[in-house]
Image (tube, rainbow, N blue to C red; front, side):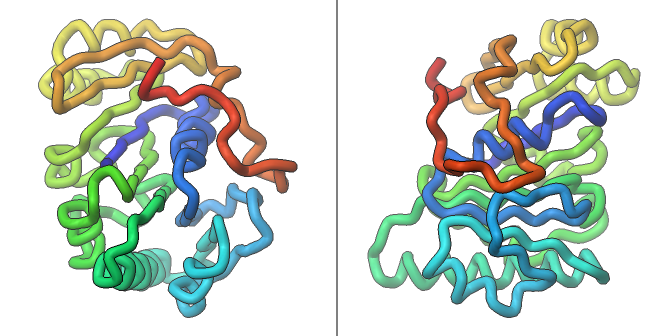
Length: 223
């Protein structure tokens, strides 16, 4: 699945995105802000990533410089790993979380390997999750094929127009008035939405090592 999480600072978008990522057995977080400390496997580039994916549950990529190049290399490693498992006939359970998508500037350039992950990876086996402050931070091409939009409180007029055009006027009206830490989930395939108003369900400490990084709470898709 492709999941887009939109929200302003301190609304909970990164925490919610991590909650979604935890629903897969293997996880990669691309973390240009250096926010995550949910595992000790933190690397500055993708050189070891493909090998680590065979051995670890979770890897964080925190680029120290040249964020776009490191991101493209990360996508290359993940796509090679997906193809390797696909060629062996094995099932995957992978999440790829890209925090603060504006750093990678997909409206200007989408790496071929990222496009392959989004369009050709097994939908039920691989989740790609983007967080961003605004819809404009993510390419229209990616927004067009996303399975879900997760939208926290949004008040900027242009953003509400984009949300209205994609999700309908009712969703735009609701997100404009959402309380802090609440959000709307838009299912693009079905054209339906619902409000999630229990932030304690997806609350996780992402800035230090948790005792248990496996998902123990509710599955937000099946509530």
